[in-house]
Length: 328
Image 1 (cartoon, rainbow, N blue to C red):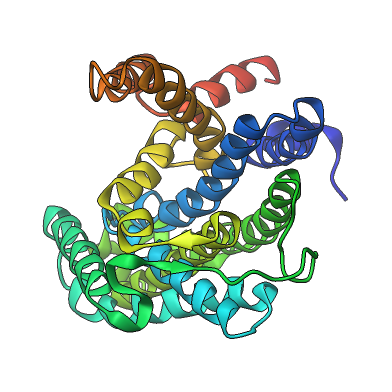
Image 2 (spheres, rainbow, N blue to C red):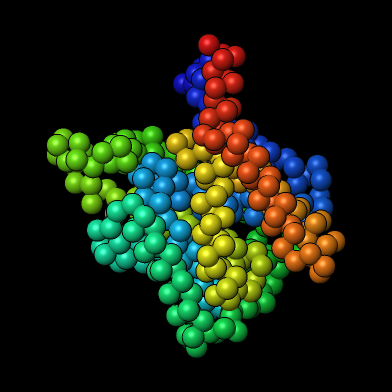
């Protein structure tokens, strides 16, 4: 059984519980369409950035191509949905197909290290985007629109957008629970050992390639789940909306701002960075975008720069130092 003092000291667990609680309560407190959309995107990025962190933070594999997994998950959901498959199955099927793709590309990519691996992930992501952009079966550049179904929980098709938020929270809870058990288990310790020194890891009888592959497959799976959630919510996708390099950068950025050496860092990063990005785009971009194109991105960048200056180790690093001082 958990004691209160143990929960206080387990800061990751505390942040996870508080984040989920906020995602459940805030839509009821402020039921505004734009705010609900920002919260939905935050939930989506919590899943994908935590998945990215399995590779980037815990294993040391920096990827800028996670939009490939995100897009595969979105397309799998859309195509299976249009062919009559339940979206509750399609969401996890999207993750499975994305993880299969991750397994296939892991053989050549994991032979690369450092910046070469990062560059290769960009190349894979951009190549896949161009491939889907010219693949007629998936609609090519026209994209795919999800078929209209009856409004129901079974088809995850609602009039009120708030219900999509709670579906996202449900999938988030399941995904975070699974990833938390993995990272807190034996595999998580192996991955961190590989991040620190592959040579040392081999001396204790572990195969770094095997566990890096496991990290990539797991990361691809949950990023694909996030992509499937995107498709079911917005009901239209094309290669540039779900496979763009910006998505990969955003996933990576949220994890870094939150703190890559902490499991809960990406959750905290998504809860703060995503609303900032959305409101900056809407308020500043909407008001001045026509005259000063890209001004909102400049303001967004300045905000992130300030965050990085005051929290170089991520927001979780600052929070942990503060809480450990209080509960010492």
